[in-house]
Image (cartoon, rainbow, N blue to C red; front, top):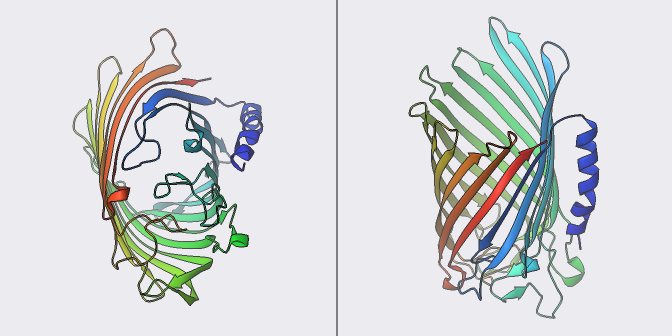
Length: 376
């Protein structure tokens, strides 16, 4: 299976990071997941193990320039429902140049990102690994590799305020297109332009406001007309979005973070795939005298297709239901292990529910886990 390629790459990633003489971070956890496939009526939950091997570092080129780099490999493996397993690999290389524009300072950052995702396509509507009507498996439908090249110019017009322009071009390649089965390729190219305003007050409150316009050009996926039938034109999406992030240190122990984000997506056909997306996140964290840390995080979201769908409730693009609204909440406790300076253990509980316009896709899900992070 394609996910084996990520597992094969693990030793090479580890050797590469180790040869750089830099510290690695290894995180692991074991837990229980009540609903691995997010089904309306799951048969039962399952135990799982998750791990992440990661590294980040920096190399100073000269007084004004430096290279930043990072890589991570992670997996989530279930005891008995292996079709819920998930693997991911990502890497980043960034060049940073600091310079002056008149009496002000500026940064230019150029970044390259690579990412691979491997996860079996389990169909909730079929209650099994997805298949065509002829019985052909679609288990690797959403496995992909992607790359992105981005550039950001940051101009600091005061000591506390800056304005930046961020742009990227990216490509996502789905490993198995299943075109021999008559399915359309999901591969696409994406382009984004985003101005951002940042401000940090004397009290330490950090404020970030951004707007963006993004275009997504599919290679072969056809537009659909209002009757749900294919048109001759290939799908192109335009996204117009806005986001606001505020980090507020209440005092030396309490910290509050709020993030609001939303976009409107419009297709280049008759509007069959037009949708609006909204999401809000809030996180409250507390750090004790002994450096133990509690955090309470919650997010709510809504994804609303503006037109009623004529396609099956779970199409080849993975869409489920016209309107999806849900919330998730998590409580996390972290504590350094006094006998091991480089180790932190943690416990986490989560609850997630979603109301779907198609009741077959509404669900509830809870997880409970215990884990540790070691730096070596």
